[in-house]
Image (cartoon, rainbow over all chains, first blue to last red; front, side):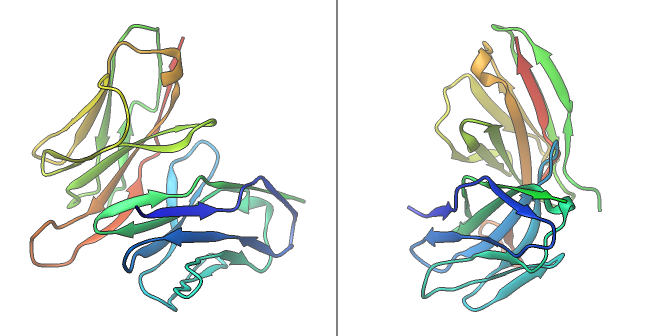
Length: 110
Length: 119
């Protein structure tokens, strides 16, 4: 069945560092791909999405490109801030079914 | 448009008791999914309801049940609580059209969660 694998955390970075969180997926067809973010004490928030190959989702300085050839949807940000500290989840949706990765905890230090 | 709301936000129960959690989806959303989140197991899918019918179910014991009302609000119930049921319970809604012409999107919008502590 469909599945999502994302890099294990935790990830600790200094402020203004470059961020990459890897995500790869397995799907039978053409899924939609998502990144969600969960701040402490809150539910998950949709961060960005891409619905077809080569689409780039972006929001709040974060970007991810839907790469069908490598079945990947890596999350990137050029300069992280302390306020980006959170847990990030990669997810896919296909045939009205949703699959989440295990989550990657990011801590950004001043 | 109001987001997904969950009540109560925090709950403390004793082993053996039962608990009911409530979720109100975004207006117009007919699909409601429930998840259990724990530090050890991560985010685990419990079940999904669409138009008052359970559409999908995860791998949880029968002590976990749910239902959905005609206004799309959903409740989940856990009976005979165990210490291991302590978790953040998240509800998510989506604008899903099953077999109905028109737009449909399965991206999920989450509520803030209910933090359940079992002592």
